[in-house]
Image (cartoon, rainbow, N blue to C red; front, side, top):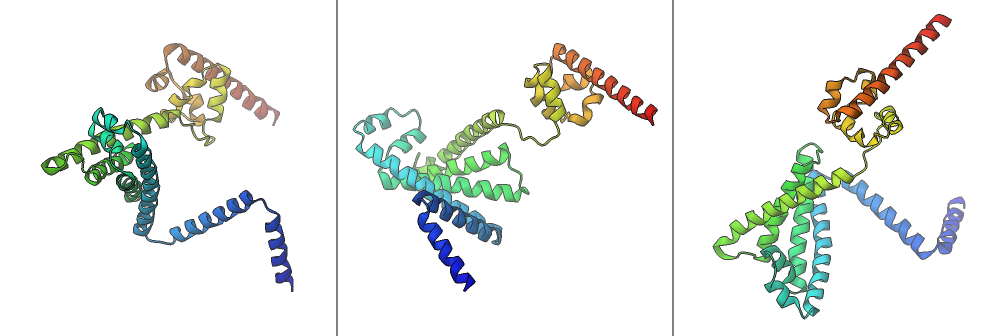
Length: 258
């Protein structure tokens, strides 16, 4: 029948596919199916799944690092010369110990990141990332046994603080280099600034939420508040006043023609 013929055509098409295409198709289907399943689950199930996924990835990375350090004859010397306990723990131990340490660290980080994001109504910012990093750093200390004995709690807190500060710095740096989303609110502004070779100040407009709708409302004080220097401010105000005059003349011409 029709269904059988369609199925046979599909099988013939799959046989002609290159192995990498077939694998990509299967991976896409599995990913889509998993995402649909996850969307139907309670939040705690999603957090648990993400934690598990992060732990598996971290465990694989830690295991590979452990195997590399195990066969490296200079590892004992590197551990002795490590600048801090975190670095020493990352170099010491065999594949299983490394896999455990990194699985705990990445799993906790992934799970906490998602849990914090959901608890804050979907907000993802530097504070949330730093909180997750603090938890993962503390968990890494406990799992690796750094600082042992009565100093373990102090070591966990101090390592968590270091992780949080590093994550906050990386987050800020990444955000500063990430391309700004084109939401259509700054199209005219971008064109205007590019025309004057002042496109580097687009981020200032975005920071102050000076969208296209505010172009004809710009003042020297408004541009000063978003930290645009006096020279560029004068050029921008001159151009916007010219555009405003042209717009007014065009509207007057249209009105008179009516």
